[in-house]
Length: 257
Image 1 (tube, rainbow, N blue to C red):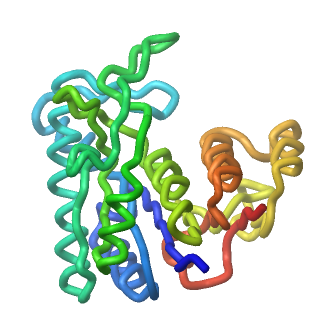
Image 2 (cartoon, rainbow, N blue to C red):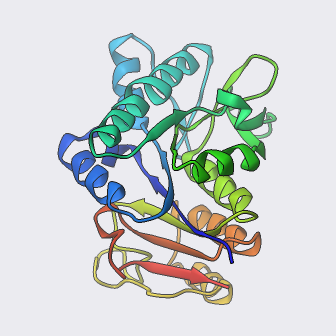
């Protein structure tokens, strides 16, 4: 029987403000057993880029990563945000290790091909070194993963944190009984975006497609759920979409086989 593993993905907003970061660190530290944390950091990257006189450009909610922006996100995601989290977890007795994809070749990507939009130095994940991660985890080391990968040819690549969480969870499902938790600013997937209490507690693929067709689920929630169903199909036991403050509760939207 496989040991349980919890993969938590948190957005930049949660880890960039002291109060929400401290609550997250307390909650994450108290999760029993094996765990992995994947984080964003986009608002910090935008703010520091601005201070450096570098314009941040977004298309469909995704950052255009030119050469100068790549320097900023590497500094911010792999340095400032990641090490603040690692230090905070160490202070709470969690033996955390900060990782970008280039560290120990843990996640390798390919630069996204130019189609309608040239996203620049953005990576699409090709391989997660699950054996290495599993070895760390069984040694009770907790990976804290920044949204950065590399191409194996010396280039860092900006990579979506939801994607890193999903691909990591899928790869580790060979070794563990994995629950993937996507934390964001709502209580779960909502039937009515203006009613925070209209959470859909469970959702199947067929129901998801019906909600999308009816316009109930739209925007950024669509790729999040697509990632969730892909994770389930690839061997992840359960995906939860909820508030970061609710990771110890039964709240949120749950997706199972």
